[in-house]
Structure formats: structure tokens, C-alpha cells
Image (cartoon, rainbow, N blue to C red; front, top):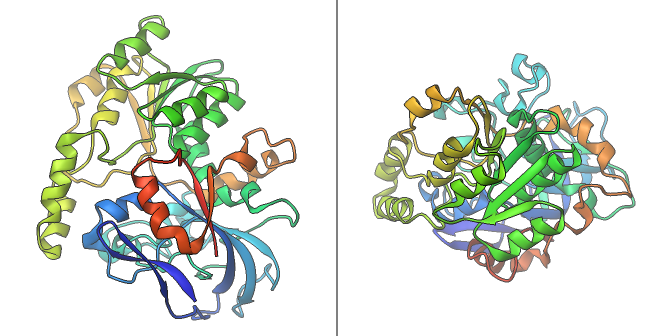
Length: 390
């Protein structure tokens, strides 16, 4: 089959790879009809090379059709249309039953000290082949895949794999009071969708970004928007009676765009041999911290920060005195997809209150995936969200 594979820093291949097959009785094989490129995929493209091998199949946002199931996969049959959550969870262990599927005790990557295995996402998370491909092997298929109706286009449901539950959890974790305010830092796919969910719940939403197309896109949905600048914190306080918003969602994370210090650290790490680079990245700070520090600065005293952007360094210092003094609450983590999917599905109706049908800015053949990674990384051509079709 054809798939997108990692070939090195800023190098994605469109290659022939072996067809997946049933390996465990709880596996299923899904024929992929659409898969997304996620902002976190750019970390693999740009930064996370030491944790990848040449030829690793990428991608973790998948919708498709069941082709085959293992003997212990109940509830699914050939021909079912399913969305595949980006994490692999059993649904039955202690942590899954607590709604913490990203900490699944069955698929935890214990040799790396990490949580549940993820599709298409480095040795840290199990090095499981991903879904930017024609077919995908789905472990723990007795629980993971979400059956969705036939009829509507893939765009209606594909975001259940990652974007929707991640943004939903970001808003849940933000703890925005009724009628309260939230500032969303970063208006890429997750930040954009978090804005839509917060607006749908009746909150006041202030969005911040550097990219004009993203700002305009959020404005069109009713978000109050600001372009990131040196005085953006003062601008936000001026909009919120001088005290700051009730909550802040950091949807940026370790992305180096616009952060010269982090960019230099990441480039320097990239010059090291892989084994040394892995240790360096796990023990030293190579993240862009400007968004998190801004969140700490602007959130009102006693407010909540919801951290949804992915961070990777182990030694990134935080202003603990300020955080303690302001009584800031901080929540974070990978989204627990199945915890939220039942609440999200009723919104994926023909009324489309979250605008999922028009959320993708680009639909491209899988073969154009390598070029799409480059365009997405450069924030060019108005690309906010791309779906690939095998």
C-alpha cells in the first residue's frame, strides 16, 4: 500500500509499505478514506527526529471503513464506517474506566515512561504505524473505533479522531465560569476549534495569533481577535477590566515559529548524534515557552490555564512564584477521546453548529502529502487544516 513516511528532518516520503494484517485477536484493519495532518505532526517534521526511524508511517487522524476484524472484536463488522481515536486504549483497565484513555494501563509505553500508545507518533508512544496511508491496523479495536453514520462527508466526523476531543477537553479543563471569558493562544486547528466550542457554550472568547488568515477565520466565527505583539498582554487586560480573562487555553506548545531562542535550541539539538540528541531533548528545555509564559501573565488571579499545546522538554523552568501567588490552576494532557465523543456526536448534525463541514481549508490526494507538510509548516497558502484522501 501507499503511505506517508518519515525520511528525516523536513523530509516526508510517499512510499510503498507492507499492507497491515491482523496480528492480535483484538485488531481490526481499516481502509482509510480520509486522514488529517495535525499540528503535532509538525513536531515530527521539524524537531522529534531522534525518536523516529526512517520509514515510520505517520498520521493519527483517521476515518475509514472496516475491512477485517480479529476474533475478539465484537461490535464491529466489515463495512462499518468508523473514526479511529488517535490513542490506543483498551477501555477496561482502571485508568480507562476513570476516563483517562491516554493513560491506558494496557497500552502504556512503559519502557519510555509514557502513557498510552499513539498512532504514528514516535518511539516515545510505541512507534505504531499511522494512518496517513491506504490502510491502518487498529489495535484494541474491541473498544477504540467510533462507529458513525453513512451519508455525510468524512469532514463531518473525521475530527472526532483528535481535533474535536482535544479542543473539547481544552475547554473542559479551562473551567470557564458561566458567562466567563477565555483567551485562546494560537488559532491553528485546535485553538480554532476550542474557540468554536467555547462560543457555542456562551463564553466570551479572545483569540491571539500571528497569522492573518487564522485571525480572519476566527473573527468570522465571532471571536474577538488580537495579533500577537509585545503589548498583547496589556491589550487583553484592557479588554477584561484590567484583571485578565477567567481562563486561558495555550494551544501553541513547543512550536518554534516566532521564538528565536527555542528555534536555536532545536537546531543545535539537531546537530547532535541521535542517541545524544534523544537524551538532550528529554533532559533539557527546547520548547517555545512564550505562549505559556503569556498565559501565566494574563490569566486573572485565581483563574485556570488549560494547556493543550504539546511540550517536549524536561527542564523548562516555570515562574512558580508568580503561579503560586496568583493561585493559578493548571490542567493539561492528551485528550481522552472516548471520554468526550458521546458528548460531541450530538453536535455533528446537519445544523453543524461547530462548522466542521467547512473546517478543512485543503483537501488533497495522499500523494501530495509531502508538499502539504511543507506548506502547513510554513503557514502558507492559507492552510489551517488539510485532509488527505488515499
